[in-house]
Length: 342
Image 1 (tube, rainbow, N blue to C red):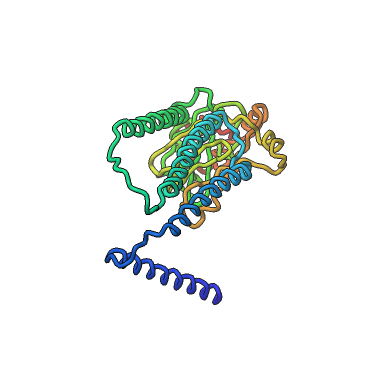
Image 2: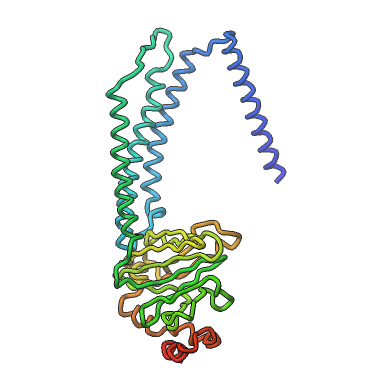
């Protein structure tokens, strides 16, 4: 530890001394006592700039291609394909602009480096150039943003009528999920009803809540629309499932939603990756507190028949917590017991 402090101190002293030297030089130049125009210096700087440019571009493309599989996860949803296409089109445009501007940035100092025989030319304005570099970026950005907005509107709009509905609630520091029962209607919920057991705040004055169930992990069917209805109990969380290219903030007091169609089952992805232990995960993508790291939730993508089997095996939450029958209106108690299979 002491050696690290010594090295940092030495580096800081060197930086300070260099800064003092540069300030002194600039002061002398401002006073007219020193001429910084030196053909050898400018040639050296310009040449090193070009070497840095060429080396930087080579390293950029080498590393990007070499590590491509490590930073690009396989896509596992229909809309994820659209999202990836938008991403790579945007990437192509921005990389092209980046490379061109960097070439110009380093080429100009090289081409116009100081020469005692050179004479500067006066070039104050060009209307055609101004129009060109205003209109072209405006058109390109309009197309990119318009395509992105259309994709965003599609996935946040009303889900198809046959979509499987899953309510997801984030809280410090875990996730909870709720499914509608056999009636396929998710019951009402009220944050005022949240307690140690009823963590979703299910409102049992609504008969649609009688057969709702809360599993320990999320199951969704392959090839069928899935609607995630998203809430948060305390602070902002973020529902993030990278393989589905799905991310949506969970905001207290402001329900959000996101629908998608998974197109690869968990088993399909295990085969594709050659990893029998692979699992899809839902994680929090907001730093929501000290336990943020623990907000991981298993997502299982089943084949449709396996999903139906799993769904049929789930027991209503009310049947496992009969004490909450006291919260059911008297005229609905019998209905509640039948719906909950009690």
